[in-house]
Image 1 (cartoon, helix red, strand yellow):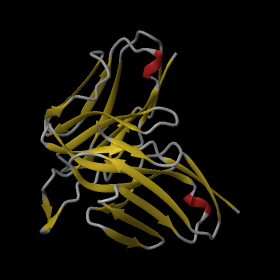
Image 2: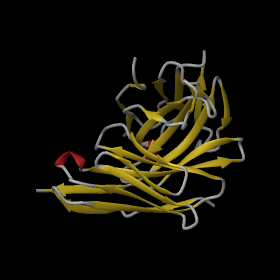
Image 3: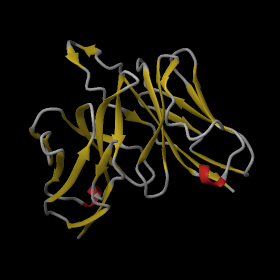
Length: 122
Length: 113
């Protein structure tokens, strides 16, 4: 597709269940980011992928959170044993690799966002 | 540490001009982005400043002063559809060896007739 696609758009789950959130980045974007946005808060960085590797996992709140990316494209964020405080909008963004050029122009590394998955843990 | 401050809420009148300020204290500064986010939607890119000065793009302009750690987003000829949150984000080189975007909490702008 033309933009970043995330699914599901909404997810309601019971406390203690596991959930999987999916992100399909813009074709050709090798960098992928996950953020969390709680009501009235800014975007909280979770994890960054360059290709299939994750150089920065520093934002993952606990070991219940994990993410993977296969084939340099689709990424899944998994939350195990969900808690009520996990309720938030989970946003995915993708960008060209830092320092890459398109038609000779240095990429600004603009991150393009998906519409997010609204997770509600009851 | 990394810190970004912007006002929580602002209101303005249709047709007017509004300036949204952003101050930051970060290490490894490599540029500043402004994003617009309508309720329930994805943040969308508005502007990028890496050098001091004003960048103009239609009704929107963004200014940066690196020495003061200060930026503003200027919206002219406000329209009702400009009611949204405006996110200031600093691009900073971090120890992981890449540029990371650090977001402020956003400024919720309400435009009224």
